[in-house]
Picture 1 (spheres, rainbow, N blue to C red):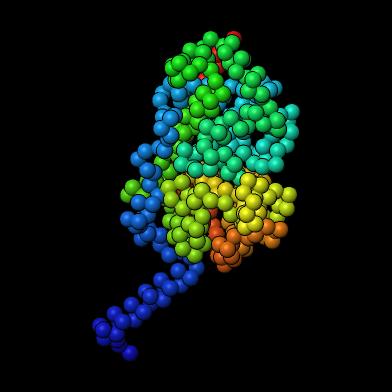
Picture 2 (picture 1 turned 180 degrees about the horizontal axis):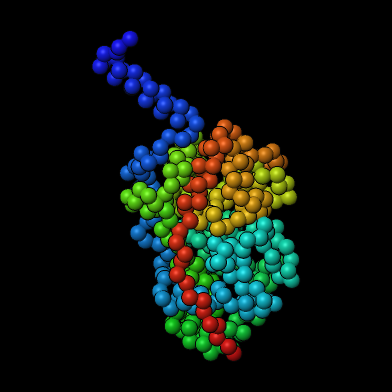
Length: 348
């Protein structure tokens, strides 16, 4: 039986529609057709300016002084631990441990979060107990479980090093070596640690081949079916909020320790997803070793715990292929290595 031109065209269209429907059902639709929207570009490209307080504007002298202090183990009571011990630039500005190691090799309760893009955060630490980077920089130094260095002992030690006295004068003229100056300098350095362009950023800027097809599909899942954007929003992929995501950790009340509101029991700060492929293990307690584990956790809607589970935590019903695409998108958020020269620390 012969078919007329109209019948052939109709049948071809029906086959094409059926193939596209099947492709979407199995999560293999050609992602080469996926382009960033204007809304995506506005939301996810880095803002032009790095946020900084009026009383501690970043200068080369302040950043340099902060870098020296950040890598100097003499800021700890043991002269063994520096800020970089837990925030190693070679490990995504974290330490690769499930939870941090503190003074006397003691195991701490929480993991070391990356300091990448902390300039864009409004509250610091997993529980948000510090309201500025200046406060956060000083907190671990004096904490007995972390660096265990009393400030009244540290300041004379730094004053005894001529190079540091000169650097403080250049960074903060007339202020001398002080507790406030130490916090401000380290905060200035940390604000300079910002994410570089990743494959995702280059894709947003029009380089279609900068991100793989699975990663493009993963981005659509991230925004849509998985609703990751409910918490991981904007350029820094964080709402700066606190959520109980259903981790079976009954010993740590999280944000509730700081703010006694029932809904915050077991809630922890939403971390940035920038360079997330470099910062395993994941979660505040280092529970998961891979991004696939993390995605599986969210896919099942978290686990039961004694706290108040976030209303956003619901089973996602993602297929295995969709979960893998989501992982590929998260990997595409890894930026180029940040150029950094390690300081040669001054001697007494």
